[in-house]
Structures are given as C-alpha cells and as structure tokens.
Image (cartoon, rainbow, N blue to C red; front, side):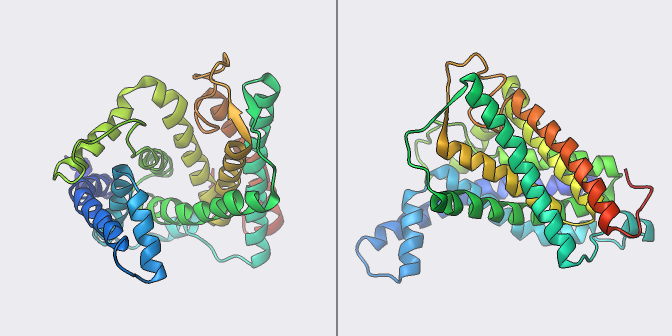
Length: 329
C-alpha cells in the first residue's frame, strides 16, 4: 500500500480512475452521439455540427470509449498534478529538465529523428517485400496522398503524443522515481494506453446500457492474457516508449522524440497504404504480425533505430551542447 501513497502510485491510480470513469461515461456519450446523428438527418445544423454528427453516426462503441478515456484522463489530470506536485531539486532540474534551444538545434533534432524513424521501418518494409512477406497494392502512387494521409497525421501524432507522454507524464515520473524507473514506467504506460481498445469482432448487445462501457473495458483488458500479444505487440510499443524516453532525457528536449515518433508513424502509414502483408508467409505471426508494429522483426528494427538514435544524439550533443553533462547515461 505504500506504493499507492507515492507519486508513482498516484500515476497508476490516475490511470485506473480514468479507465473506470471512461467506462461509466461511454454509454451516455454513445447515446448523445447517436441522438445528434439522428437529429442531423431531419434538422439543418451548421457545417461544424453536421461534420461532428456525421462522425458520431459512423463511430462504433469502442471509439466512444477511447474518446471518453481521453476526456477522463484530461479531466483527472489536475488532481494528478496536484498530488505529485513538488519543487524539483537543483540536481533534478539540471539532469532532466527541458532546456531552451535555438531553432537550429530544434530543427536538427526534429529532422534527425524523422529520418531515423523513417529509415528504420522503411528498411524493414524493404526486407519484407524482398522475402515475399508483403506485396504491393494495386493502387496508384500519389505524393499528394502520401503527404495528406501519412506525413501530416504522423507529425500530428508525434507532436500530441510526445507532449503528453514524454513532456508531461515522463516529467511526472522523473519527479517521483529514479531515472530507470521513470523510463520503464512511462514506457509501460505508453504501450498499455495504445492497446486500450477491444479485439476486432467484439460486439456489445446493448451499447446504451449502463454496463456497455465495462464490457468494452473487459474485452480490452483480455488482450493482456494472450502471451502472443505480449511478445508481438505490447513489447514492441513498450520498447518504443523506452527509446523515446531515453531520447527526451538525453537531449533535454521533445524535438528529437517528436521527429523519431513521426518518422516511425510515417513509415507505418506509407507501408499500409502501399503494401499488403502475406498471411501465408512463414514469418507470420511471430516474426511479423498484422502490421509493421507487431512481431519480432519490428522489435529488431526498433533496436536498430535505438542504435542509430543514440549515435545521432551523441553527434548532435557534441555539435550543439557546449555544457555536456557527464552524469547522463
């Protein structure tokens, strides 16, 4: 019980409180969304409301659950910040705080991360294509489509998720724990949150019933009873979270993690737009799962990505950091 009285325990309690609150809110938001969608069929609303109503009408219950989880986590965030709020020591500020950097340094970090992330998964994509584990889709290649459907969403995901996970949550872990504990804890949370969605094919008899959110939550948590899931999917994102946490503390900045995250997402999206995985391949499902982020080969690609990132960060620090910190790992 001492753990739950600590700052790290407060973070875990915040996550479970957000899950419980999301499960309670899901059927109510679902009912409101479907009611709005039905009303849009018979009433004239503004263009913004019409767009929201259209999205609400198309969304399934699991999407409502994910939105409720985000809202719950944000609503409970002030309580978490209040619980763990304390003044960091001088050593903590020196070792872990984000530092002001020039735009040249920021853009160098961003571009380096973007190139490394794209190159690491791009290399894996080429290997899969060469071995016959994937094949090209019969779709016309379009730079405009790649830009709008892959690059822009990748940059958006990189910015938002790095601000939340490495900017805010890792910062809170660093206030409460040792460096390695903060890395491992934030990485596990990063992976856990990404798999808070039910398996494909799960149906809920009455999405408007008070228990529907808990049914979604139960089927979602059932992921974690499958050992194959841990090896081929959970471990991959946990390793990615560890690499991004390392990059954030080594660079004292979010720019390299944003670029690295965006580069990986960009390569993933381009692959899904242009390639099909072959389910008959002997590499499936252990070596490569349903996409480039699941399987043993993506784990190896991320280790390659880590080596490139560590080397690049060392070069960038020698070039731009005039006051290196020898105590940093």
